[in-house]
Length: 341
Image (cartoon, rainbow, N blue to C red; front, side, top):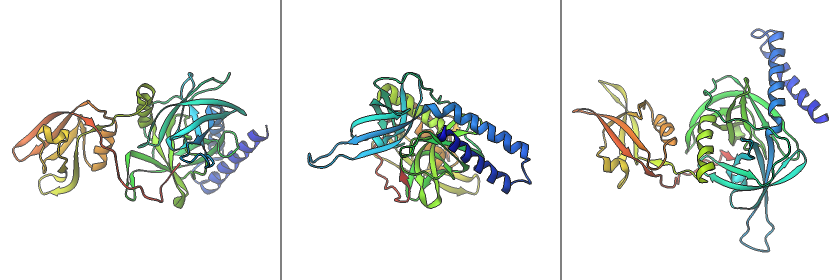
């Protein structure tokens, strides 16, 4: 009861502050209506949240094992849990804490590129709920978001913030797809938390923190669904690889264009007959208007997928069907200011 009272106090102060700074925009009735909706979303989803813990393997038998902790949440009635991969990577033992009980878990698979891992409980709790992963629309910048985490020894704890943008990179680090940037700070043990919209839909999962900006990044739900489905079936993700880079250039005739800049030796792109200086128009009928557009589409492709590429040359417009191969390991250096949970 004390925990629920604390959560309600947090909600009250958040919405009171929102009302004070925006009383010219929202009426008091609208603020309290929003308060009720957020409380309803928290009550509906709090029993889906777990604390994930793992004991790391050590090279030296005399070295004391380290214990890592993070947040996770049920995504199926069969006891599947999504969390951050960094929490359970090379773990000797994994378990979750739920309703003051401990449950052993097995790692079904993980993906280091998105920092996600899928767990399966050995024995299920008698009562729990799960959060459905759906391909919801990307939230609008400025919309309210709710995160539910399980930090330290606390139970499910709500936090609130604003969707502040969408980024494909941070510093020198290139993201797999466009990440959702929020104003919700992410502390120890809060990576792997679900991010929910004001309608209660899952819109992402927390995968990285931005301590300097007092914010965090979330992988959007459409990407999460793709990763979850692959991990559940294969235990890993075989990302597709085309093998070329594009750069943005300007043309007197076409204005802004995306030009194939470099084609890797032995890549599917080279074998297909694509040429450097070709203008990339579309991939799988999706217009490519920036290098980020290409990354977002490629993220959803897999090894052996047949993709259709449309390019333009001086002699005309051409379509190519290309079978993708496995993506090489990404050795991009990560910016130290972007903390993986």
